[in-house]
Image (cartoon, rainbow, N blue to C red; front, side):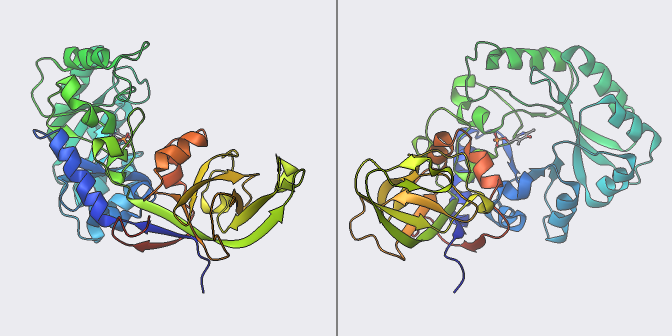
Length: 366
Ligand SMILES: *Cc1c(COP(=O)(O)O)cnc(C)c1O
């Protein structure tokens, strides 16, 4: 029998969450973001779960080619564009739409002949200060790009730093939107704006854009703020395992490496087959929620490479073999992430290759 640890991917929930994104932004076409191995769900599963999307967006050029090999015929967006002039023939061959975010990329396109026209996204830096042209430089970049033979269309794009906190004191959303509008004023073409945060708050923002680029919400997480369930999103990845050992300890006994947890009274400790080498965050502190046999309990002691310990005191009848849910259906990943001082994105993406993955409907694994 294989180790009991298993990630179940809910393709039905992925489809459902895509329909939630569409309902939030009914005027927009949707790029489903499948970077980082579809946020840990598997590229091919991302393609199947989001088969109804208008396009798929990612950052890995080799995975973009893989999507074509797997039969994806709709548009593909490369969110970081291309990295070297030797990538340019690939763009034409596989009809990949690169984001163009720096002058070096424009220069490469100027001196490398495109043997087939491509569509591009021209990125504006509206305050994230990661990738993109400043609003004041944007029109000139647009003009220079438009003059290159083989550039068929230019979609105007920006990325929000604070879509989960609209009134951010340093950089509120309306300021980023204002910069985008001023930098793109008078330019013709489609616009691509929101990530999940922007999509989830589109009614407050009154943003009109031809394309949106949700990621985390499609995987049943949120970028912050309200819970995923409050938006009607369903978990798409449930990580489950089992109790593989039980210890009965007394006041003063300790658990795990470094003896960081000390029992204050008699307690039952269950050992779960899941550790940081599986992608569970090593820094998760005592008290991080875990569900055993449907009962919510808590992590105790340090997470080790292959195992972690949980308090079984509140779980009547817990035994070796009891089912454990680490996150997903029955335990929101955002809650586990929050307890561990990180975000759901990181937990999903860090799912280790050694974890078995299967597919199953949501609602059958809680
Ligand atoms: C990752 C990414 C997204 C998706 O962001 P979420 O917060 O997961 O919705 C959208 N646009 C760009 C440019 C990205 O890099």
